[in-house]
Image (cartoon, rainbow, N blue to C red):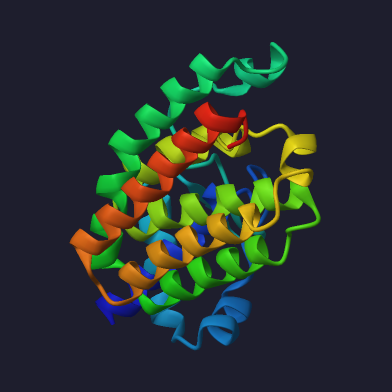
Length: 229
């Protein structure tokens, strides 16, 4: 039962962290969670208790459980880059260097700790990204979601908190440049994401490290060579 409870906690935490259930909104009812996740009421009640203990929700008798806040306790604000207009090459290189330091290890942890549900979520984000070649804004959001779900798959809330606090602003790419990219450019980026997914799916920590490092290094090289991420 403990494993089922933790899976439910992880899933609900991810939905809160991704903004699917926002602060002030009510969680699905106990009956709905039982039906959706195929678990017992005991599992649901224990999961709710853990979310309460973590300070993510509060329960009001007769009204249900409500989200108090996203798991992140501090805001690492990248929005300034977007607010200040077009980021410089130096800005984006610095961000990619920082992301490499964090995301390489996150991928390794995700490979060792991911659940089947977490892997399915990662696949869904990747499929959404791959289908968005002609929709740059959708591609950026799906790209961010893919990287966020890797962080969530680590099972360590601090990775998820950090990536969630970045928001899609961490995927810094001028929309017009992505739309006008050379033939095959988007396909290569999708292939890099596929390599990351495949390593996590086969629980290959070193392979996941390498795949993320290659992807972000290639992003850096593309930026420096053409001004495109």
